[in-house]
Image (cartoon, rainbow, N blue to C red; front, side, top):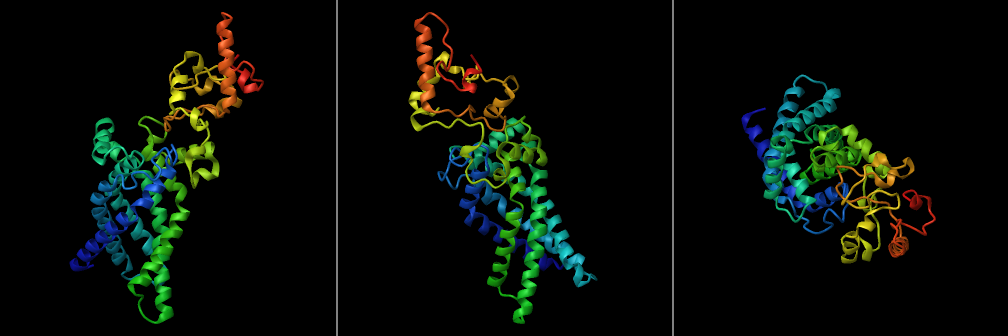
Length: 350
């Protein structure tokens, strides 16, 4: 490949990458928030849809340029003397090597961007400073292996399919495809590749967003996928809204933990006991192993998800608990949480 062609690939790839990333950034933010452990609404919903865009603006050009210059050079070298039957394999190898090189630039930008997307109240500079202070340079490269493991299968599907569609269209019409025709082929190939690799993309997001020191923070893709499977099942690999993930507190609006009424109630020491006889809120968390096996799913507290996690039960049972505590206090005895509740999970702590 001549130097002039290499520079053309570098510039064209960089400009194309910046345009695509900036135009589609709102969709990328929505995707990240859907895949995040806290769920779409708690991660910001549609608020701050451009959070993290400075990281993308800075990293897109060198990232895309590194990929395309590697892709074109490797493809040019492998094409020499190869038969047409090996063309798909050539595209696969070139795309894979391009992703390995590009991820050296992409991963730090992706880590800062995704953390900013789920924390719209924090600036990109604050996210970067926090990551460097607490995790160092290694924190910026957390998820490198998972990103490569996601991008290589993506490229193995996308680029051979894209090249094959262009060749097929060119053969059908008798001349090389136009720019818009190449774009149509690329859109179809990219969409299909994204659908196939979505579970790996979810695992990558969970690893990058995981709390330092947690199991997901180690970067093991199989561990991340296993955790998603155990807590959310197959739907967790293609999330639509994380607000109903297991282990979360689901209460009416006036009883939710962020409402004024709930804040006043949670301060009462008697209401810090759950129906299981263990802690209800983060004031005194209870390890899951101390709970009966049948109840552990309600207290599946994970270091990856710092949100308080308690069993979901209706408001009338909370009122019964309050009444039971008041009666016991008047009688000079220690109130038992959930007196009057006849369910087995309410009596487990009494």
